[in-house]
Length: 230
Length: 394
Image (spheres, chains in turn orange, purple):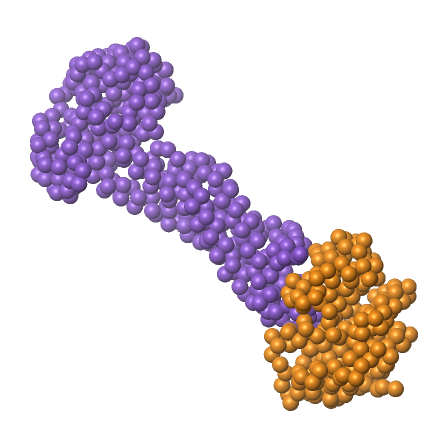
């Protein structure tokens, strides 16, 4: 389902963190290109830099060094980055995020959680999207439940619906099945593959599960902050 | 469709105890504030009413302390010094005087009044001029005395109730062993007239064994020069003049000290409530940092987050403010009773007057104070960086 247009291009992305006097290099000069419609899996053990990389690719964090462009627009580079306001606009225009811990708002119903991004920003053509996505993900019967009243697998499906409600160009999923059992993991895997095939959605996924990583058409292995492909 | 108010409202329900405590603090501040403002207005109005119900704007009396004398007058007590009745004609002749009424006040100890006895106040009045001065007086039963030497009384509403007298009954003047016939009972006025027994001036003079009077009540002509008239009256021998504007100012000065203290307490209560709001909202923001990070990842601008948190502050303050105003309305009477016990002088009638305008002003002050308190937490929440805040949950 991948096209030819490059949506993400990164060169020498580096991210260091300071822990007291110690400097930790979480990402060490990662370069990669992701094309439209690709399903890319980043795989590796804990602390290998997968989450740091996906956060940089999703403009949730700034690199210490390196460059990154989104569809030809320079986001980071030359030690500079766009303003937080500008980055927010890019985040809501381009990305949908699925977090490992779901991060649903516990006081809002399933429907309200999914509709939340539309409250901040509504892209044209998203009318009825909440119901459509909940229907596709088999959650329409749980629409008025609170997150604590549904299972972990259902919570993750709600998180997926929320990530997709504003019709993002790229879906970023950080350990989307990290908290789920095998049955639920397979369920979520099928949903992601279906979205990639039918909707042409670009998916960038992080997982430490080799089997789940194989859902992607490209698997990039992360070790000690470096990316290895093929 | 989900709205800002709904999200904020639901957030506040997460920590019910904390929210209730904060709202409680705001409620107390609002209650004290609205009661104080209501007292401010109610006291002044009640004092104005008392003074208006005197029927006259100036009093001429024998030399002595004017403030004490005025207070005695307002409380229905007696002036202890006398002036010659001829002074009435001198006063009447002054330009700017519309009406005068001579009064003789007497107080006798009645051993049967209350548990340990009490003072019975008698006003010797000239029915024609006194009634003309107080056109609002209405009779519940009967009417004024027939003649100026009649052995009759007109009783104020409370005096009649206290002595359980009706028209046609006889009443006994303590200390003097004189019986007078009740010919009229006044309707309730809410003034000191309610507790007064009115006797024809000449009759009371005879009972008291004097041909003098204690007071002359003066009603000025419209647009009369009050200052000039007062100055001219001071030229009369052995008299002093009490203007009720002056009395009001003096009483208001006395009360302002108590008011200032209460106002200081209100400021402190308001500050405590504001600190409470800052604490609640800030705690709530810090606890929800990962969530706020997720909202920003979804595309929420700093202004969106700021408004969301500010809406929570608005809800807290509005709920507390409205509850406090409600309590202010409900306990206005009780607050008035409490103030009456504390204050050196309290006029008759309700001392705390709260209306919708005052309620709106109080709510505006509380909400404004709350919104100012909410700026810091809301600004802090708006500025969080998504990844840092999401990571803070780990």
